[in-house]
Image: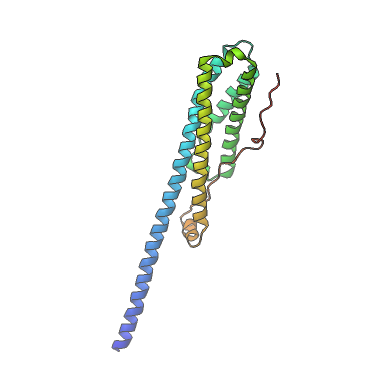
Length: 201
């Protein structure tokens, strides 16, 4: 009888230990997923911060360029409209999980980048504008901001890659499914981004 009781206690103890270890592993996995999810959100906010910096620079750039009467009005209109479109949509953490909404946001930002590129290419036809100190400072700030956007997008994509890989690995995928951790969208280049802007004078 004592031998059976000892075996029963041993099996019960092993099961209890197994359950405790499983719970500890589950808590650790969940906390790790939360940390990675927050890292993705943090890196996205850094991208948005640089987008906002670009948005803030554009009105000053447009106003500086407007001072040159012969400057192509359509180029300025395109930049202003693209800025309005890009600033109309805010990407919340929920949008990062929605491929269609995230793609729409990327397209709006791509249109703004294209309009700014056309503006800066068009400036080449106006030597007096290219020599304007205010314009040169704004152009330098805008170019710096575009570089910062590229750096923050890369960091964002790296954090998304780590997060997406983790939620797909077994057995973490089980907890990711239970607690509704979904795949995040990568920032991708918009269609046609590989082509230089075409400007006709």
